[in-house]
Length: 243
Image (tube, rainbow, N blue to C red):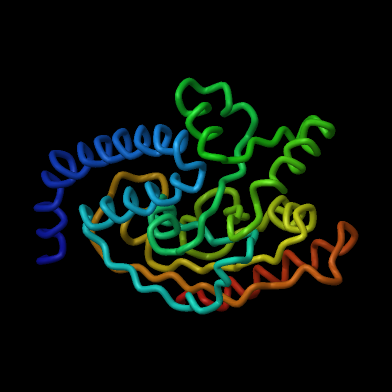
């Protein structure tokens, strides 16, 4: 009964304070990231992303514990792969992973006004998988960005899990790791689905956790046995999911 009352009392805060703050923080920090990138380069987007994520997390509010930061080598680039329970996974990764990373985005999004230009300016990677030559060109361009500690991030499930259990992994992230010749950094996120369940607006404060696992080497893997790499990384991520 007390829990239901708290959820009811939270609703005015969510609609009257948090959602307006979401819009304001996203607009201001997005504009700042683009303008600062002209002067200081793409990595400034990572700094703005950390500020954006933490301000929204604190405004919710949520608590987040992080395990395994010692598994990150700051000078090493990775293909980061994470399970996906909630939109709040994005806040966890931006705010607390401690890695400068880029997203891989569909080429169609480049045509979206403002968003397309902003993401390109901040160094995110557009790939047209329907055009082999264009995709190879994008991957070669990505090789110039994904180095010196800058990584690329994927949710290999593709969409959010509604019950927290892992769904089938797509191979794109793993093929990208082979293309870029960088190790894979598995990440497990827990309890964000309780803060903002998939496909709902049922936001409520809570505590989440993120486990950063030891990197997985791509040595010995190729296009012919990439499925084995997928299953190996999926097993690592699954080992951190709370029952």
